[in-house]
Image 1: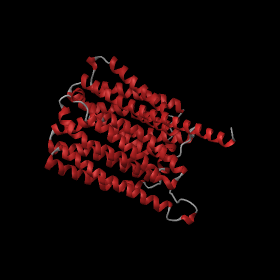
Image 2 (image 1 turned 60 degrees about the vertical axis):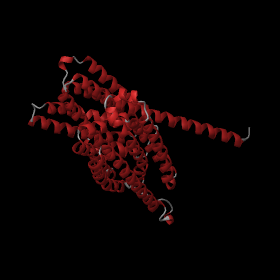
Image 3 (image 1 turned 90 degrees about the horizontal axis):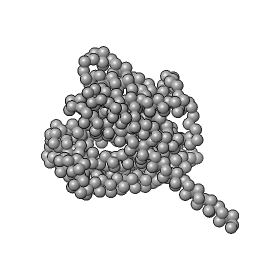
Length: 436
């Protein structure tokens, strides 16, 4: 065998190994996201069976509060970490100390807020439930940031194992909980306590010790990226909640049930998209380091494939047999099914939009992404409200899909223009002028 043939064979084997590794990591990301979502879903189902309506409402409010806190922590710690350069073999201990301390600090702030709230109104059931969450929040955020550290290292199966621990712990605790002691606080204690245990395991694995200076150092060094991400997350959260409030206020609770039913039916697609999204950030980071000038076309191809896959899966749910839909949602299926088709385009557009927003962050232009969202979010709420008033909830979702497509066009135009400005405007500089 000639030297060139040997080199080609070696290169082919290396390419196959790389593809196998990427597929393995992708499965790990999807598995981890599925386990995390499954934990929250099963706890909600247990709560619905064990508790009265009012207590179940308390659990829903507290879990929503948890999601808000996790979203803030990810904007401050998780997402900036994912956009930094990965160290495949070993994570620098300084970075571990910084990101873990920053997450722990956010959790402590929430814990102090819930204790202050308890001091004002200790007799409220909602207050007691929030205190349960507050006590565990520092460790819950450590558990979440440990997942992001695992993603950053390229070992998502470690994150999946930790989420599996939370899932099993929650189920065991809920099975052992005597029905006569079931309340919003005790059910949440089972969930929060299991997550806190998973957080302790993460701390032991990372060998982390709290350090306020390290946490503040992370915030200070990444403030240029953190502030737009916080604003971006705030707009996303307000849009998601605001749309539901608008539909409820205008069309009533039956329309809200249909709206939520469609989202529940498309829940597995959301899980898959979330898992793939984390993986695409890593691929985008590598592409940016290797060939920064080709970043837009590379990200466009990947996000277009992701968008097409999301649209296909959503349409498959739309054509699901009626018997299966009614088994999943009961009487709500009849009202929810017409909304699945417009929601398919909402989800597909969001997947395409993800590529542009990730690209803007990679080239250091997260602020421009925030400005687009600041314009798109209120316009979408206005369009949803107007459509709902004149033609009902189905028209409202179609309005959301159309305005989402327009917003995605704005994001891609902003990304391509920003990239051209940074990498093509001054070739005489001897290379790209991307900012950090």
